[in-house]
Image 1 (spheres, rainbow, N blue to C red):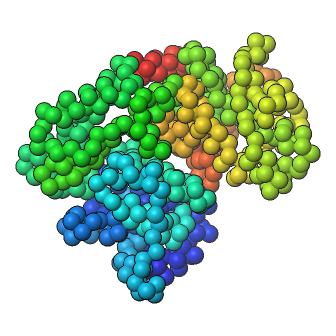
Image 2: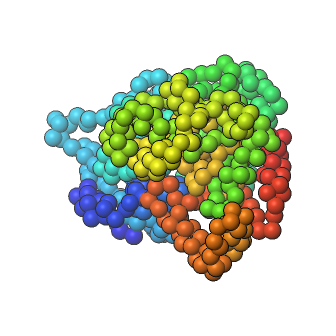
Length: 514
């Protein structure tokens, strides 16, 4: 692991190593005092990128004069060990001067990024004026210096996450902001560097934040969607712990941060409270949407057949991602464009809208529309088949179609399959399945399939070698590599019939619903 202290060294390192990172560069910005939550960010970055950079900078701009900048936990040796254990490639630890803070070239004035008031006048922003200007300024500096493909932030800092997402979107920066779930202690306490302030009985008292949120979640799952009873349920738990001095308890939209009277889609229930000398924050996402099921796995595991049947059994949409690529290909051909013309294809996919319609009785498949034109039959034509691979190879196509798939996922009620559905497309899916089988099992299935079609059947050893090589290529490809999500249920299908596999997945999905 390289240790980088200056902007010049960081830029040199990136210039030397960016060409050797075809899967991209991941940035994990932190203030140090690393814990398991940070480790989850580093692990996620490690799984999705060839190069992982962690920054440690205790940002003075985000602390008020009466806050804990001077005593904020610092653990240099522990942080270095944590980054090395996570396989981080480079650790960037700039000084304030290295990042231009206190630079007198502008007459002593610091150039800062000022977020919209709509994002800062609520939640933590009410009691910490100027805090998010400091956050936005330093994150903007880090994103511009590193220019990562992906940047990783924890859901625990939900207001920060919403602000950074909107900053990146508003300024059209080509970086994906990846949100990672809150990591908790066994008793529910969200991991935080400030937990180190908790001493004696305060450690147990601090769990009241999570317990209050959990009570509201239980009421939400019982059917309550209205603001007042949800907040009242959480307050009832909080009132039993007088040691917790509540700063705020609120229900807001997780994107706009505007207060919600009722959850109709997604809601963020957030809390901040001081226990002892520790100011702690926590939150939960409340989702009023249909089930989202992500099924990943290697080629030959039976994903497509199983996914279609699971969707039919549960009455959900089968999100046929392959049909989406075919629909775009048909549209490009219809417009008389060259499928190999990356620029022309990028223009088309940027403006197109794909949606699924009703099930076609004759085929059992859903209608697919692109720009309000029915492409259901056309996408199965020979011309589309011949060109779809060329279209899918353009990175702009994947970016745009994944964005459309995520918008469909926001509504819920779907099942999707692929290589990285649970890790990239729907990382917050309600159920994640990694469907797999041994190479030997898949070799035998492939041989049986060829035999049934009257085609020549290679030696099983040859088939096994071919499948193993396909697995290797799929797992190491620069774009959309085959990955098992950390929270996915692995289902090994050796010796199981399709009916048994479908039944097992459906049972798991119904358990999640209940």
